[in-house]
Amino acid sequence: MTSIKRIAIFGSTGSIGTQALEVIKANPDKFAAEILTAHTNDELLVQQALEFNPNIVVIGDEKKYQKVKDALKATGSKVFAGEQALDEVAAMDNYDLMLAAIVGYAGLKPTLQALENGKPVALANKETLVVAGDIVMQKAMEKRVPVIPVDSEHSAIFQCLVGEGRNKIEKIILTASGGPFLGRKPNYLVNVKRDHALQHPNWSMGAKITIDSATLMNKGLEMIEAKWLFNLQPDQIQVVIHPQSIIHSMVQFEDGSIKAQMGLPDMKLPIQYAMAFPQRIPNNFPRYDFKKPGTLTFEEPDTRTFRNLVLATDALFKGGNMPCVLNAANEIAVYAFLRNRIGFLDITEMVERTMDKIPFIQNPTLEEYFETDGEARNFAASLVQM
Ligand code: NAD
Ligand code: MG
Image (cartoon, rainbow, N blue to C red; front, side):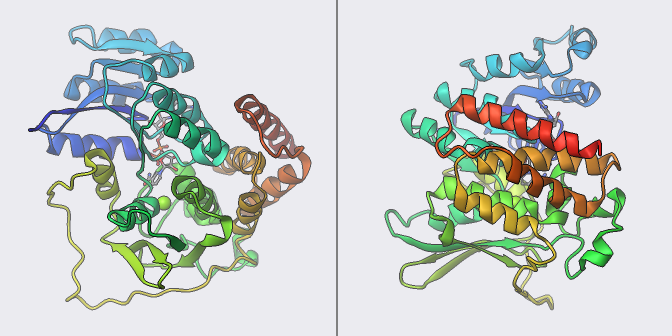
């Protein structure tokens, strides 16, 4: 029996979104792109819609609605525009799986809406779990739908846990490449510019996550993401630097046995795994070759230099709305850095000052998460102006 899985790609024009479309293209008997959404890139969205013939297309930027609608006039695709449309489309019935591939806080509401709607979610958008992980996972449980990780580390852990049933996890070991500035010290980092920080050694990704990888905030966000996905205590989550990015992460069980998931760094693999789960499907991606000379190395992260990891660990342990504050401040700081408004080390400074400023709430409601996000953004933005 093969029925075609109808995929709703939220964020289809991004790095994850375009790679997901490659997977769909290679497996037309298994997947169809049913919904495509983009924020501002109308040209790519139209091109994708003409190629994949989705039922629904959403352009975030309302000024571009008419242009997209005209371009797709001859097709059967329905076009919607605006932020609200994302939630409305997520609540529709015409898809089987949401691929949550919007970047940042903007991904939270549509993802929650998909879960509310009883739709399984393949989750790339880690910020959703950083901001409101308790509410998101609670909703998934209540509606009995899976949240399948796409982030490569979490996909690795998820794959290691298949078949382990109720076996207890002692800890998980998240691997980090270390980014382009591995081994560098603050006296170097203080002068780092945007274009340099955008050069990641192993992965080609969107701008925000590439900067997060350079500051190690990405790994901090991933610690919090892992806590919610796998129901862990903060002290069960360890980070190790592994510059080759071949081991994508590991699980250590109660008997001390460690399972790792390995492969060449290629996001298409975790994307495909999440879309096809629980099946594996064949592909012709390049394979890791043990016969070629190569060394896998591991080292402790330099948390004195990359203090974002310390801030994220604090937020992880503190819980409540603190991860939401961390995320909001970081989003503002990263975009300010990308616009050359602040320096590389100012990113950490802004996050730290915002975490000190915003009132702590132990058990926030969804409304309180929204408010926290807004307050933290405003405060962080006020620091940029100085
Ligand atoms: P990207 O910047 O390349 O793409 C982002 C997508 O989201 C685009 O389609 C854009 O149109 C859309 N978008 C942006 N802002 C929006 C808004 N305000 N409202 C609605 N849509 C909006 O990002 P990416 O690298 O593909 O990352 C997407 C998510 O996946 C992020 O949360 C990232 O952390 C996560 N992730 C990415 C990778 C990767 O290899 N790129 C790996 C692991 C996790
Ligand atoms: Mg990752």
